[in-house]
Image (tube, rainbow, N blue to C red):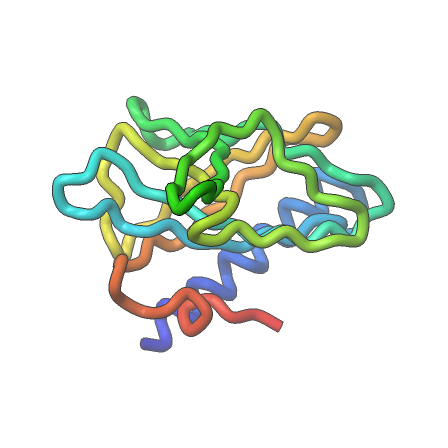
Amino acid sequence: MKKPLISVWIVFGTVLLFATQALGTTPVLAVEGYARETPPGAPMSAAYLSFHNTGAQALLLTAVALPEVKDGRAELHSTERKGGVSRMRRLQQVAIGAGEQLQMAPGGAHLMINGFRLRAGETLLLRLFFADAPSLDIRVPVIRMNGVDKDQHQHHK
């Protein structure tokens, strides 16, 4: 059980290092997250990221790519509930305000992942594109749908 936790800390440290290099000499964006394994018979899955923008300017996440997956794609989505019906909507961008945190979560903002199967225990490379900042590569763990709770798997303070 210690290996996944160590891996998560390595991923978190790597993301913080990339954010430091990509956005300036001081870290202004910390990103962590996870992806869910693709359910049996389903054509897609989801990934959830948490952003902490410690910088003085807002950042606009405009797209996400899957550099290691030829036929796969990731799209920014949100889930809206109206009249007892949940609908997913594609988002053109997601704003991360200066000094703010943004948490993607089931039932809210998320990344739709489709075109290939995600399996628990693997990692997924995501390339994040911003309107006014360099792109940022992050690697997130893939977890079981009914397995370890996200907070138990990836809790950082």
